[in-house]
Image (cartoon, helix red, strand yellow):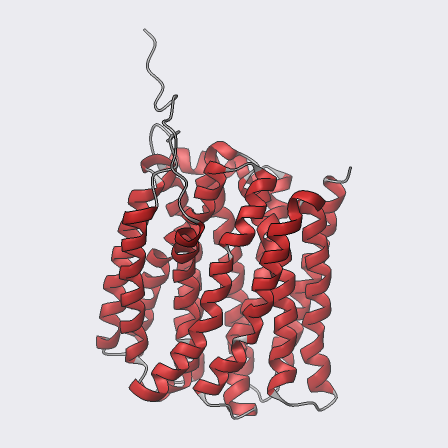
Length: 404
């Protein structure tokens, strides 16, 4: 007897507004960056050292990396919309608990929960786009959607710095709880279910089977390596920049936040370029061009500091070029990774996102630990340049495999 196949004739899908996808995708990047200007204040509040406080950033990123492996397959089985709603509700609860943390260890643990739940918007925003568009169209669409990932880190340090100076570090978490409630409302009102070909069951066996399929694909590995290394350049900077800004450049949290805002400006421009030109030039050319620009930009801060130019502009302005480069390359790399096997786009989005954020977490932790034991920013600059150089290697391989 033949068994019916689930959802073989999906109803017409109402496409969610681009602004809604931008909003849900922006929550986790905002939560990453909003606390960065307060890290020295948290260090003093809990009478601990900078290396331990830095864990509220690096373990947050690690939690995002691990949870994405689960979130993607969950959404393939149960749908995008319910996973989004549950994730954001749990994120709000963790934000409310943060101001009451009795110790730095408790705050770190709460941040892990925030990272694991708040990243549903990043994972499923990508998967929703892939549900609705083919590879080149998805890359163009992601170029617009990921502007939310640029706007959030652009404003987050500024908002976080002002909240820190006027109300203390606890106010940042109350603000994030309010934004999380906003994401719940946006999802409920504007984001329909787009996964009408759900997997018939979820088990560790099916999850790992999907992951094995992806990991056997050279295309998936190369696209994921490209996005991970591009992101790693930024997170290596993020892990060490607060230390350099406060200890070497003597910037206040508010001023740090304002300077930090120049980096994502480039990312917004790069996303716009990606959205306009990816369909014309193809994903391989966009990735290669962005990767070359990223390496040139990553070498600039080390050069400036080596010749004695110790200023905020020498630290932050090259990051605007790195943002531009990532805005050009990342949408194509992400689209390429989740398009290898469209029928398991959620699993692909989760696994590639885990690698992307996991790479960022490792490089961020290395940068913070290296700076915590010395008075030179050189380790951070070397780490950024090395990640960008490896990104070129991945981009060249992608270009070679996708050449006409």
